[in-house]
Image (cartoon, rainbow, N blue to C red; front, side, top):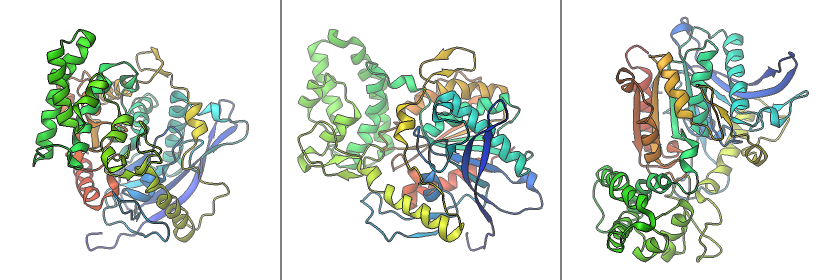
Length: 456
């Protein structure tokens, strides 16, 4: 890396979790990359995980900041095998040790003994498992005095935010939390809420800009998105709040502005009562080209069976890369780690998602039907004032829109002295920022800056 050789140890294995009686009830699979040092207390350790719920962590493991990385043709479709798996010049291993963890029921992690999926497939059940795993890993590997970080993607950000509080309650203080493509308030996207439409509009604008559907096309994307944000939180939010009481003249004016920002026909906007949601937008934006756009990364284009459908048949941003990641993982396990899995690696476990218990006991004691992870994160920062947060966002992500993340992070009710501990960065990519070489290089630079900040 950067012209110098980096020697490291790679470990693929599992740690057992135990129930209250002391019996083993789960096996959590992980892959760890560590650099030997004479001063382990100064060497950070970072725990990384994808989300789902029910998603294995192979995407972060094989595509982001590990020492090996699979190459994709992003944002085009990646051809079938053979794939290219090579050393990753943008690995974070020169800065921190890395421990990639699969949640129970995903990847190669599974219940054992008398354990079952229902013991782990839920917000709070999942948190307890990760607390136990991290505690166990620190003990087995003698890393209690090392700086500690969490790095979560998608639902993994909600897990990381809530874990920051739960770990603190178990006397494990974190140095930092990294949130890639965040979900911090699950209730914010409930059907019928005006905020759902508001939160997606800046992302729709970014995607329309990328596909040359904004006319005239602004030269500067960030400046254009500042306009979209101002419209979303101002005139658009006010118009939606009026609902059916909105005068026709104002409705026409708002529809025209929505059409401008989103690249959609003004008649389509009106027929949707000014409220646009991702599925229809994905089908409508490139309808004249008989293409749909991806959900996780709207730069990807899919070919649907019915070009007149209101909903895409599939997500091209997943189908275009998932096979490459799965193949690369198995090659890495076999060739580099000499590890032969006894079970099939679960990239996605739909059973875990369908059976997921979304109820969460918030830090103040109230039980919510959907978790507010931002509240737990804020309390963790109050109790640990040195805890720092880095939020990483892709402009073209329709799974976790960046405006919703900005809103959540600006409504944590933090003391003024803590607000500077939160930093937000953006990249011209989608949900998996690391798919693109240039974006990953910028991401690595931002991560190194985060880890090397004074006091870390």
